[in-house]
Image (cartoon, rainbow, N blue to C red; front, side):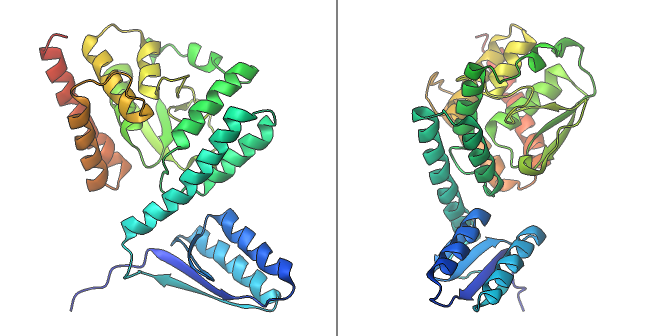
Length: 303
């Protein structure tokens, strides 16, 4: 007999009394704050983790205290694949990021409120929705304009003398973080140790160097991705590295600024690595092999 797949999702079902009317709105607002995905009326999904189980248990308690009933199940949906469900979560958060980006572009006046809103969205962005890095870049630019950014952190770090440091970045690495990790370990800090964190729960520690993280020592600056920033700070002249920076820029920023002929093939390979390896450590390791080969080819081409 074939073994059933392990449940990956928590399902909350509820029945809420029609009166008082504000009670239903309160429950729905709370589920929205948790980042729950609406499957149909009165049915909501979250990834199956201890933290989300506790969240749903609190909601169930609120519902029963208000005269309703609620049930929580660990489920493996048969009509939707895990990938389809994850994509629906991304669509929700992508819409949130777009709304926030519109506010940043039109009315960035209440900066602290917008910053809190970004932190709230990021905390429930479980699967790396499109738009997050664009918002981070916009917020970084606004902080620089307001004089609240901390560029001195990067200027005080001499990348020529760094060795064996702890480098911290966000979980679920994609092209910019994979390429930046390669650049760090291949050229900047050969004995670097990488720590992958949930940024919403991470507290900076003295001596750690953050990259591709909001407020990190090395992250997006203006329209430059983290790889470009690291390469600029390192100040080494290398045409092959500059070419890789252009490839990474176009894939990460998505503005088609450079349009190198190698970009589409590189993108396909990186996408394959991300799809094949759920582990961030494996993505970094396999990505390093790909970038090593790309660097060798570009060096041989004598750009």
